Picture 1 (cartoon, rainbow, N blue to C red):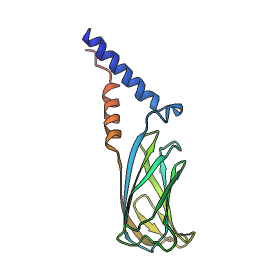
Picture 2 (tube, rainbow, N blue to C red; picture 1 turned 60 degrees about the vertical axis):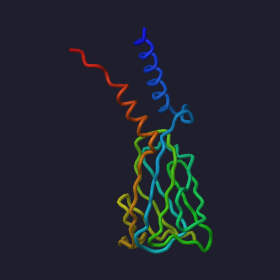
Picture 3 (spheres, helix red, strand yellow; picture 1 turned 60 degrees about the horizontal axis):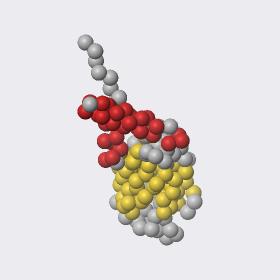
Picture 4 (tube, rainbow, N blue to C red; picture 1 turned 90 degrees about the vertical axis):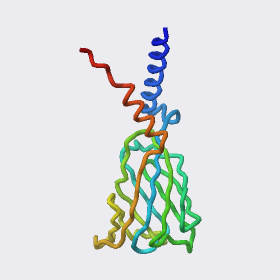
Length: 170
């Protein structure tokens, strides 16, 4: 009797996790992410754009959690995140910022972005963190960055992997 309850609970959890990958269930279960950035060197900027792969265009619930420059406003559109700082506020070498966001799918990757100054693109940010001049292509700066799943996301992925494994029959 006890094993039936356990089996029913596991089936329910597997169904819940399975439905989370269906687009109609996006609001029910999402994966959380934290992306931390440290601007090591390069020109000052007032707008940052990041693009991610693997999101299915479902980035939402963005929150700017660290903002050394101050006053940044974060928004999301499909698979992109944009942070803009108010006029006269610049992100400079040594500044860091961090944001959290959710997606309906996992895993995801940062694939690139841009930095802008007063509306003009001044740097292309590569996945490695290198910032290149948009016209000449030479290196003009560098970010250190870390994209990690939120603790609840990691636990859900591990649980889903353990539960969906089939028992070997000898």
